[in-house]
Amino acid sequence: MKNQTYHFLIGGIFSLIIAMGIGRFAYTPILPLMQKELSLSNTAAGYIATSNYAGYLLGAILAGAIPFKKYRTILLRISLIISILTTALMGLSYSNSLWNGLRFLSGFASAFVLVLASGIVLDKLSTIRKTSWSGMFYGGVGLGIFLSSLMIPSLNLLFRWEGTWLGLAVVSGILAIFVWIWLDETPNVVEKKNKRDITGKVPPAKWLIWLIIAYGLEGLGYIVTGTFIVAIAEKTSYFHNGATLVWMMVGLAAIPSCLIWSLLAKKWGFIKSLVLAMALQSLGIAMPAFWMSKTSFVISALLFGATFMGITTLATTLGREMNPSDSNRTIGMLTAIYAIGQLIGPTLAGVLSSLTHDFNVAFIGAASVVFFGAILLSSGIHFEITPNVQPSNIKKTEEN
Picture 1 (cartoon, one colour):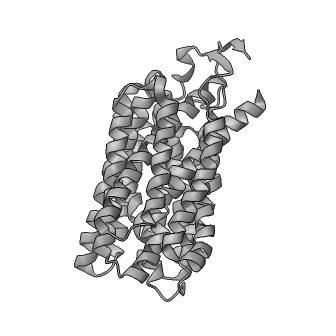
Picture 2 (cartoon, one colour):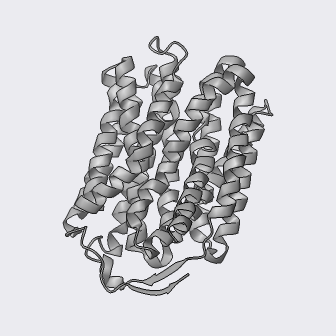
Picture 3 (tube, helix red, strand yellow):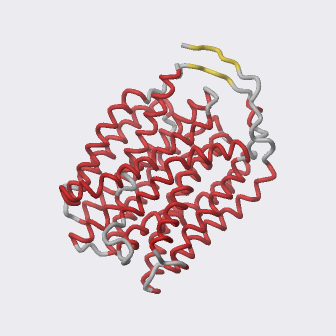
């Protein structure tokens, strides 16, 4: 049974590597390569990024609104196929219009994968009383960012930016085989929880609106760094065409971050942990505006990587625990508001950078937004009591 559980978890991790770490975020380190060879303007690059966020928003809304729990596995597989194909086609086209369309579809697919895989995996982990393992699952995004950052310089050297997209698509296709085999929704152990077991750990459902608002502010603020940090670093004299290192630091810090934040949430409570994570992230976002150096970019990247997927882990897990009977809808709502923030953030940052001729004001504004979200969340700390009390009245009814 343990091996099956591990395989299930690894399948979930691979799905996030494909759709998020590669399909969604590989654009950030590949963008400077495309701009260098194609003279792609910041405006055009911003539109392409915004197309991805728009697709992500639509996907999140539909994934949360449509009652398709019986079809989660097949829809997840279809979404993974779309993600892989759009990644490959980015390297086979030279049209801005086509790139916009492909990134829109990629964003749509990545939102479906995140919502569906989160629902499947978190429901399974809750059933087998391993909710804290959600940190390992969401670590797949950081692992995907790190692995793609390792591969991109070599792929670009051998095959230029076109081959980089194609090479990442091939890797995604190989990983998808294991997702097909291992990510099966059929439970091996069925356990029933007393609904009152979690009420002492999380706020009441009516408090969900504050989590949704704060998570939207997180999406608005974090995406400024998530979109522009590599391109900005590339234009400085500190990296000598090696700015991919910055994105690698993001992925490296993100790999263990989700598990660490999950363990902290178990000890301190979800809301306290969220407040701390968002406060640290706001510091990392603002840092390059006040201290421009190679060290500041690396520290900013590490703080960003250590928090952005940790915040997603905490917010989605908390949302799921507050409304376990309809996890897809709750995760979908959170993902949708996050996507709305992502859609607005780069546009505002672009306008501010055009007016001020640098990104300092944009970084400070983004950091302020995230910090304000942390302040809003602090209103829920009083709901948390001893978060590491073990649940009671758990009955194992079937074991295969």
